[in-house]
Amino acid sequence: MEDVFIPLLIRMLVTAAVVVAATAAAERAGPFYGALIGVFPTSAGPAYVMLALKEDAAFVAASAVASMASMAAIAPFVAVMVWLAPRAGVWTTVGAGLAVWAVFAVPVSQIAWTPMTALAVNAVVYPACFWITRNMGQAPVDRQSQRTWWYTLPLRALVVGLFVGAVVTASHALGPVGTGLGAVFPIVFLSLTVILHLSLGGAAAAATMHKAMRVVSGMVFALMAMHYGVVVYGSAIGLSIGLSVSVTWAVMLVVWNRRRTRRAAGKAPA
Image 1 (cartoon, rainbow, N blue to C red):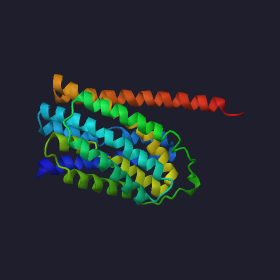
Image 2: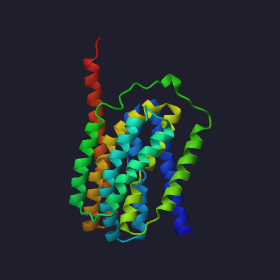
Image 3: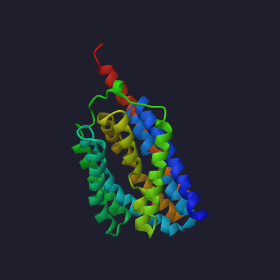
Image 4: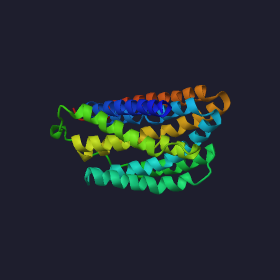
């Protein structure tokens, strides 16, 4: 019992803490940093660490390929939420996003993927979703209407933690494909969207998800690096390689965002 409960509890606590930090960053520092903190592999990371502790390297490597292919369902899921969030209520937005995720994720789970074919499908899906959402998520956020109460911080942690626990329990691994799909289930996206939509409104949720799609695309490369790292060097080094790729991607995005912000400030009228 402890072998199941303790890892589940750890994942619940880690994910809840990071989602709280991400929503706080989105509320105070803006959508980019909220997306960056939230989309960093907070859910997949703990899932793979726990997986590596109980399964062999071959299982972990196969799960990474399944996760990599499943990332192709994340981009259309986020694109729908970016479009809907400013136009619809929070539950309509989340429900539609989940429906679109399922439409893409179910067929993906039925295909035998290789790292190269998984990379190829993501190379088509992400640019298409970038193009579709290129003029979305830009509406100004009215921070004067922000609604906060003293209990929001513990409530966020509790709701997200319970949500993680329910998802992990329901999708308990029945093989590499199920494990890979569950590891990248968009729980952080869902949690962020609900919390931001309720506290800051649909425009803030859309802006954060718009940035998040750019951030999460790097997970494809991190998972690919992790797969090959696990195959060649074993689970511990392979997971470290995947984390290194994620960190490098995050640093590159921060540098790019700062340069873009400075250029925009330089073009602003005096």
